[in-house]
Length: 256
Length: 252
Image 1 (tube, rainbow over the protein chains, first blue to last red):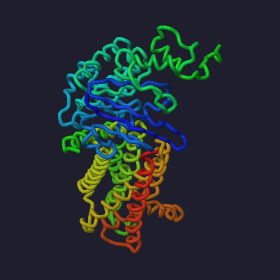
Image 2 (image 1 turned 180 degrees about the horizontal axis):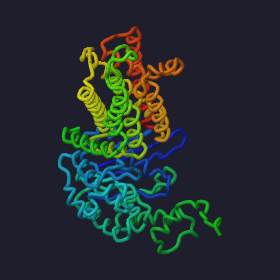
Image 3 (image 1 turned 90 degrees about the vertical axis):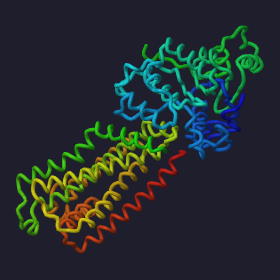
Image 4 (image 1 turned 45 degrees about the horizontal axis):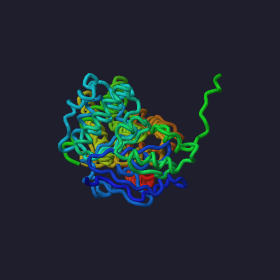
């Protein structure tokens, strides 16, 4: 398996805040690497460095063996991206957006077919801003797939999708992976992680506390946690919750 | 960026521009409505008020100021800041095309709209009121380019200095309306009292309007060279400061 992208000792600071500290991992051909961790733990920052949107403070990023900041032309034709926070022009329609993005690539996937497969064909003449959350999400996935990417970076892909579509999306992603595409997925859903991840990158406060397979995470948790926190047959979600320090509990009692 | 992508982006941006009411209305319809209104009142007979020129001979070059101001002070900053605030550019930045090419396409489109607006306005003036253009066409075109550059560079600077689209909107609207009504582009500056005229002097669009009026009539005034210098300096300063701001902001 050849390496498509690598993050090497990456540190990113915003002023005094350290968003990512000394993070390293690879994404190989035909594998899904899932980045997990609480909000604000540095996941999106790392994804944005891989996408060439952010400059590392120290360390380096390699995508297809090149620095994304200086080699746009060699990288972007083969990189599919779904951003967590990105919108489209206000008055654009679904099909216009697809046609526009298709024109950016030399041999794009057939967007008509993708519209059908993602159940958006009926909505092709709608304004993008009039789509529901789930429809918009599927449209971003469509745009990410248009380049026929070698590497896909999906930031919270299934947020806003209903359970059925979410499951379908998993099957599709697994098929895309099996075709040799490397995928970096950021997710908060542990069922998704369990279903898809070949490897996990566990982020906490800007640091990568664990990087490896699912089985290894359990061993890691057993070694790290105090014995009273370890239960037999812990689910992935239980392991995640045990490893993440308790925040102040959120409560809604003010309305009672 | 391939020419296929460039053309597709231009077509898409044109459709989006036409769907927005504000830009097309103020660039194409409003200036012609203005000359229809004033033309129906005053006609284009030589008037003492305008030193022997007809009202429309003076009004139409002045209205070119509206066309340029709409593009540079409204369409350009509002559109750029909307794309910036909503992360539209960010998404383009992860494609082979990149943000820079999209910005370039947008600028090109707004410039094309201003040129078309100007051509429509002058053609309407010629057809309806047979306006007299005694100045050199070459000089008029050169001044049109300079005016475009200077007013558009102000719009560019606004988007570079202010981060939030609310601030960009506020400043753009303020400058646009202030200049629209004090520059002589809509209300003839000949009727302004001295105080307003002195205030209008500091507005770049006033220089644009004066230069158009004088270049159409072919009678240069002593202040005109100063206006050319003012516009050239504004262009250089705005582009330089704007570029520095954008470069600093990129990784913030």
